[in-house]
Image (cartoon, rainbow, N blue to C red; front, top):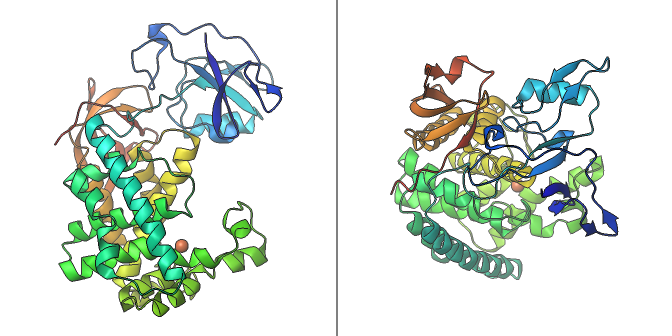
Length: 400
Ligand SMILES: [Fe+2]
């Protein structure tokens, strides 16, 4: 049976020689039977096994080995579905890597993907990437920004998905190298389009917000690449990185961008509770455009961080936003965004972290990331069951 491990961000088969090293499994495991298939099963053959570092483990993954405590007492048996608590236990026990079933490639976690539409979506996305590179280069060289041109960059992508509700599954399928390139700018601009639509903003304001999303990080072009791409920054490097909003603001001023676009570049890292930068403003002092861009920016960053490790379930991202950013990002915008994106999943079939499968029936307005799910045993209100989470949205075909 094929076995895999993750090295240098790439899946390799055990035994395959990569960079002079041969990846050998630490212990042999027999191929799982069809009954063994956990939440990641697609019912199309044996599930590949992988070994992950403890910080790569995610709720919903299914163990492929027994976990013992220091007294050799069995704590978790092979086949157990991991949750936040069991992952914490595994880390505390000092397991540096653990065998789990390999999450599948493909759109399972986000559901509703039409392959033909996806091809078209990716084509438009690539086209937009080229346009944004050109636009940003022009501004860097002192060219004036054309609002019409900047607005159109993500226009064709949005047209393809026909409704903001359909955007997110497709967006999840686009590979992004990091959060500092044009991919992030395009994603933020697209999410801004969806939020403007849901907030019912007028055309003129929406246009500025969409362009602001596209150009919000343009100041990063003036930050040294070794600072930009480093994961652990020294205090001095952090200071340098945090200059990108002011640098962007200046660039956009020289390019003749409207005030809203300049303000979004300057203030998209400000936070409602005053914890942001560069000015430490509080919610009353942050303009709407910067608040919307901030929600889109944080959403895409969480999504990217997670997708680097494995496939991401949309409800994981929603949950992360709800748990960590209420009161930090604008509450009204954040809850509208979460409720609308979550609502688009009503009726979808999902896998729960306790191994059950169910259907999303109602979104809780006050807790959109934790809806009510109908299972064989009855309806579970996830807003009062924090120990259970949605681990995957199953593909049931496109809605539109
Ligand atoms: Fe930024």
